[in-house]
Image (cartoon, rainbow, N blue to C red):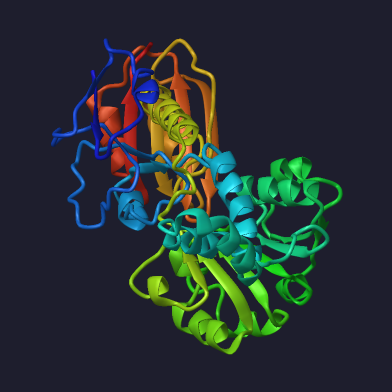
Length: 391
């Protein structure tokens, strides 16, 4: 029986995919096999020794201590693309909000609600104060062509915008989905120099924090509009404040307001609504549950942010899962121990990502004893060994 601790409210359509005869779900577990969460901040949380996997029902994982999890052999999953359409739709709405002062006009209209029969005349006289521009024919720069960025680029192109994208790490899968009418810039400066609008759609990491800063804003044309529906820290608040005050940036819209950005001039603060649709929450929950259960039951890794992707069909016997430092001679040491214990290998998969290697080894035995496990754990560089008995 697997124990799953839910640190946030997770959509029931996802949780129902955990078979009741194999899983127990409780927010109070102190010894869970897996954790499923949304925005709960885990950095100050003690990781129980029982914990094998964490699934984030969403794309961003900055609320999870990734390095600490890796050191403890805990696989961290996210759900890229599950909420992509919800975010895409809000980015398109952001284009309209920054182009035409819709938010300001609505607030002004509310202010005259007590004027009675005078309202139509006041509206006609005052609407000129909220005139804006159409996005058709304007240039949109899309930073990041992942699941969300591709949808944004395609949608913007479909409403008549000239769209240019930039992503030095674009996957083949994303490239195949990108409209042929979307141009891809060779560098960030080429992307930004002609843009009327800039939307940032990349993950926040130590390397990308403050990605939109004074230097990159200087590359943009005067009066540019910047959209941030990715993560608040991707934009340097001090630098964009200066640009907003001197008119270099005409409008800034962020889905991640904080004490600083709420007080920036010419800024629209949206209260983190990008993935706040019922469809997104359901899709994220389903994907998170499927990934964590596939790992716990079969050791297969799909959409992990700290371990390599690895999938292999089960054979009839037990399955050995080993994570180790990605250094030479590891596979040889592992197979030598198995051969010395007369364990015959039915199938083996070795995958690596940066400093981490992950092995799935199926053997003909229905079980693997503790002596073999201890020998595998004692190999210098091995930091996780799991045994899955015959299914």
